[in-house]
Length: 343
Image (cartoon, rainbow, N blue to C red; front, side, top):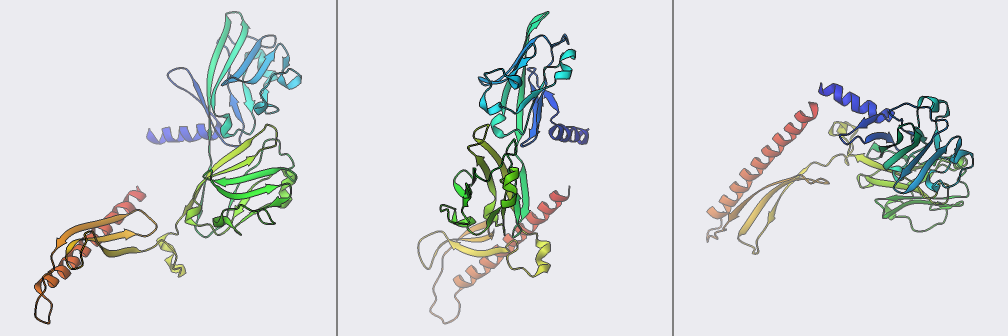
């Protein structure tokens, strides 16, 4: 039963299939850059050819149809965000279908839409539809190249346009402005991306603002945005998440020294003083947040003989036992993680 539910959710996300909640709000899930169909049909299934229906979102006029007149054939009032992006199904009006299709959806299209149908035999009916645009997640391995896609609706020629790539809304990844860019003179690029980002010059005429990040690092992981500010509809912005994965331990056969780091074992003193105090034995994984430690207090006793005093011997033995304990704990944690990953 659980497997069937997962399969159903996957199919719903891929196809944009609708789901209804307990309040009657229909939810449509669709991936960014795809087309979304928002359903609307009166319960009476009346012929809508000579009726009127209006689509709105948060005060924005999305689409309007009135007995043959609509936004796509001269009717004024459509919000610029949806201009030339929304269509309806002319051949389905006779069967009572007032659904619309929004082309190349972006995160800005997220929200609650209302479809109001007027002039019905029973009066008017209103339906609410929630559109959820899913941000793509890109995965790559450390040291490889990765392409981040960005293509606006309409596929306009971008040769004389501007597009701006940022990471986590603060790091400048790549900027192109009417032929000028970070690789031929523009300044302001974050040092982490210098000489590692390229675009596709021959694809600009086809509306392709994608970039390629070369030799990816773990620090490249994050949320990226591609903004094309001057096109219609204005302010088109696309989001994606990049996950750079550490090279698996199995790849150590490639004689690489920069694969997932080995655990580091050491000591850390937690109290002031040179001869005595509180000490911790640490076992941690570099680049990650895994850290296991034990804490003991030791008092070092000096002796007059030239050999090791009992206090020094006790400290050494305690350190060895503590290290063995922590390594054992780390080993069982690793085994447990591997077992969970195979389930």
